Every structure is written in structure tokens, then in C-alpha cells.
Image (tube, rainbow, N blue to C red):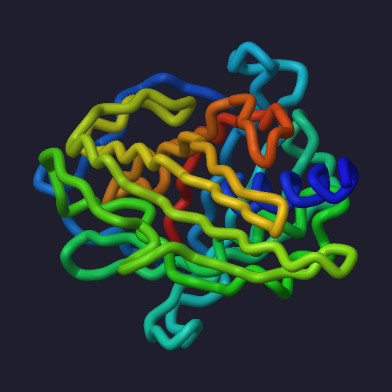
Length: 268
């Protein structure tokens, strides 16, 4: 039973997450008026990535470099058109030596500034050791991660009209998993990252409510994910706070991360 609970917690945790340094100010382009984030094929974004320790502090020794390359901007994915396809390659701290980590992301942006990411949950599940068996049970969905057009505070349900749910069988026991993301958008909020100070960025916090239940009972807990996004510079910063959550009477520390923009090279 204890092994069952551990496996369940790993699956739930996996579903939340979401993954050369001048300090000159970045030209905000359209000022603080918001606008649509757009991409071109061959755009490239480089990020420094760090995990957070048990006290929720960045662990400098864990540095990696992640490079996002736009490989297509007009795909149809999950019932939506005009989807941007992003290939991610991970490097060691030197930014040169590649690791075996590769991934693909799908983002859609709307003319009013809303930004969605597809398959966010399952793309994280496959990165968690021991959670591969749950990937096909987590349904793909479009998640609203931000809104560059909303320059003042607002809220929304990032998972749409209801939670993303899945029913899985673990050693023959039916387990219901539910994930809800509630966005608390702060509006325009300058952010400083290795690329520089981005003055037209908007900040959004998400409370990620993870719930799990079996015939033995159920429980839920919350994690915090945050995004800083600019209509001109793209996703400037992503964070997940380290936190110990309790699900089905089992305490589990969820290590957080920081991912910050180093450079954004736009295709001509």
C-alpha cells in the first residue's frame, strides 16, 4: 500500500510542473501596452535552468542551459490552428556540451494576448523517474499560462471550465487524479533576468491544486507555478516553488526550479 501511495504521488507531482549574462535593459518594443506574442520559424531562446533546494533556494551547482528553437509556427494540434512547435535541447552548465534531454512543446498565442501551452501535464510526466506508466492516462489539454494583453490584475481558470482529470489503475486499484490551475495575474511587472530588465513583462502566478482519491480515501494539496512573459521577448522566466505536499497521508517534497531568459535571437 505504501508503494502504491508513493507511485500515486509521483504521478500527481509530475502533472504540475509544468522547464552569458549582460544586464543591459531590454527594449520593450511596444512599451507597457501589452499585445500578442508571436514567433517565427528558427527563432531561438536560451535559458539558464536551476533546481531549488529543500529551503526553496536556487542551487547554483545544478545549472543547465536549455535552448528552445522554433521549428514550425503553423501546425494544427489539439484542435487548434496556428500552433507554434518548440524543440528544446538541454546542455550542461557550459552551454556547449549537450545532454540526452530533449523535448517538444506546443504553444498557441491569441490576438488578445492570451498564451496557451498544450500537453503541459504529460510533457512533465515523462521526465519523472517511475512515472512513465501514467503518461497515456493523463489527457492532453490546452492550459492558459499567461496573457500579455492584460496589463492589470485579473484571474482565470488556466484549465478552462473544469479540472483535467484521469482515472488510472495501479495494481488493480482505481485511482482518480484531478488537476486544477487557478491563475492570479498581476499585470505589467518588470522582470530582471540574465538577458536584461524587461519592462513590458506581465507576471502570472498559478495555484496548482492536485487531488487524488482511491477507495481508501482522498486528499489534495497546492503548488505554485509562476510565469513572466513579454510580448516582444517571449517567456522571460518560469518558476516552480519547492514545497512539501501531503497526499493520501504521505508527505513528499516537490523540488522547484528557476528558468530565466539569457538570449532571444529572432529570425529575420
